[in-house]
Length: 177
Image 1 (cartoon, one colour):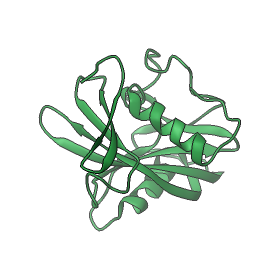
Image 2: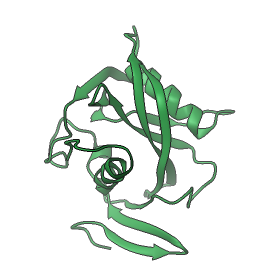
Image 3: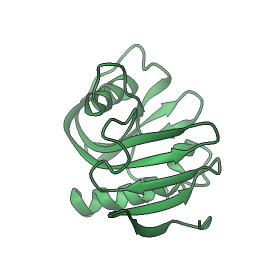
């Protein structure tokens, strides 16, 4: 495992990237179709609104893209749309599955679907649950891994590789990391 950066390799027919995250957990990312679980229990949504990145300010962790747990009787896609609305007030226009990653923590393993969403409208809400609501950025700072304003979720290779993938598939001439 390379602690300096990701290692890339094809494993079991899937192309995967391996990282060590902020808390020294192993993270494996793939842009293949649900390589770790067809029923993941977590989602993370990279959002754009009016040509800006739409994040939320988590009450404890800082700036991050919206995401969270899939609730009972809810699909991962439904959870992604709900989390964007709850944490930012954003109404999803389009949403696409990008990939999936798993984190092997000290006590458990979690699997998250990654989505890319465009937002058609931001609605002001009285409550954004565990966040302080929407944050709009022209670009994600180049030093995001060392920037204390940003959540640990934004500090490993998943963010960088996901932004690369999104720019390749959906965006042209967009600044970001």
